[in-house]
Image (cartoon, rainbow, N blue to C red; front, side, top):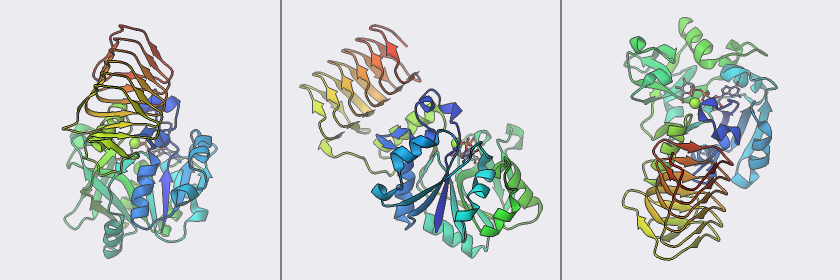
Length: 354
Ligand code: GDD
Ligand code: MG
């Protein structure tokens, strides 16, 4: 089976980080996010992947290439102007012959693809949508099903008075090729706002498969941090990209550790990228991810945070529940508190308090 991944969105809700990278390439625990989706596909025997690009396409070619390094065959279909989620699928029609798995490119989802396909076939569905349960369905596509799983209603970004269930579109679909003829060619078209509701009006066989695996959309800064904390805390079942150096600490090649480090790893672990240096007396609590070529100053204290590649954290700085973009300078004794985020290349002078 072929998987098609939609990666053309501009990721505006994840600024400032998407100013430097398209969202699906943002590092998540020091790996480009899409690699986590590839791991899941490979686990279910899918190695043939079509990537639908629109925003910043060059980065995908540079980072992922033809996929050989990752054990995949990657092909690209580019939209010169974004065609929307439906238009992107239509635009890739030439590559799609049998049942197709379509994925949003910004979701970390431990989807049982094999179980999903079995369900789709057993229901003789024309289109199946993987569902997950969330607290606030207004941010997603609400999906109401009957007891047999047949979809009754699909409402994209419903208002609170339209909420009848907590199951939402998890951003993974199985399409029969017949669905493609329902999408008009060459124009902007939305799966969620046009195709799904229109198919329901026509009485087409749409089914919802409730997935119980870990699920998170990395679309906002808060969720981008959360997905890191979930991976480092063992809540999301993902492989860490670097070897274990000591209990609770994973470090890439060339990472150097100073003396007298404090490591409180009862609720998670610390990951350090290649060539990162940690000075004496630094303190790490809970879940911390530091990218490659970073420096963590003497006595700096980091808790539940993410520092991207090439950043320097000054002596005695305190970081908690925050994200530092790539190539930043956080001055000595500066404080970054909960919910703060520094854009790539920022300079936070000594003793600043955010
Ligand atoms: N190729 C291409 N072209 N891809 C696009 C385009 C486009 O014009 N527009 C969006 N995408 C990609 C994005 O890159 C992303 O991977 C995916 O389509 C979904 O777009 P988002 O902008 O992230 O949508 P959302 O998060 O608001 O809502 C979607 O995802 C939710 C689950 O996370 C919808 O599918 C909801 O129904 C769903 O619940
Ligand atoms: Mg999204």
